[in-house]
Image 1 (cartoon, helix red, strand yellow):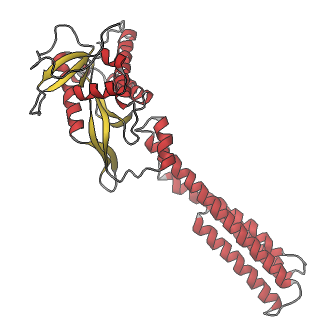
Image 2: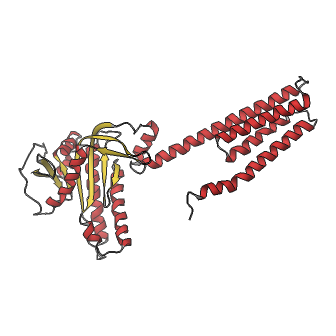
Image 3: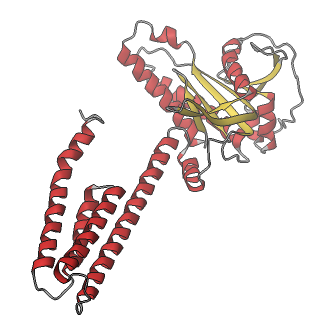
Length: 363
């Protein structure tokens, strides 16, 4: 198995042959240019030395090689002609020097272009861990500086497996990890399918958001569609494993809409792009409250208002008004709406109908 420590060793094994070849060729060209009576710009062959050096050296090595070839060209002229202007010899040497200069510049530009491509590929690979492919393409193109904190509205979604500790008790590590992989794959695919982004994985769940850094006019709609996708994916998984003596998976999804702060946090060695703010806290509390109501999905009144503002009336009709509920850590009750609630489950609301949502129930 290859490790990163092996890479320098491999480079050391590869590098000497190219360096020896470049040095040997440079020496041969110098001798021919100095000792032979050939009437053409022999030193122009130094461009081959620069090209060989470019195969395995970085920018600094190419610069040193180009400078060395230029010095050898000048040294050869001085040894043969001294400082006198001898016929066409100065012109031949000038042609050689220009050839070396042009080759060195072109090689350096090629190295710079290759470094830019690699940087973009690294950025794309890093962003792809958290953002959907469509968003990654936009972010790479506009070079958004994530080091600057920004505040903007977003739909924040938390999803978590209910009873995972009890489910994994007594099962083999391979089975537990296999289940986690399935679950997180379902969740990730649903988020990316609906143009969301993953903030972080949380053991047997995740935190996702819809909006930042590129807010759209369908952030709440995308979040609701993602929640439905998650519910459907889990139902299909349970159906496929119905004959395998596996317990049915249950997932809780909580969503809230509001202002969030996005920025990179952490130490200099490890930074993490994340969302913070009260919207995140409320979304987390709503997800945890799914267990109290026996609901697969719970959303807040603020989220429903955003959903309606986006014109997604049909999606809004899928949710059931659960009234006002006191969530842990909150001073005021929050108006909740559910999807996929088990019948006769959950606590009664503090008050039914905490706000007016204009849902047209007519066919």
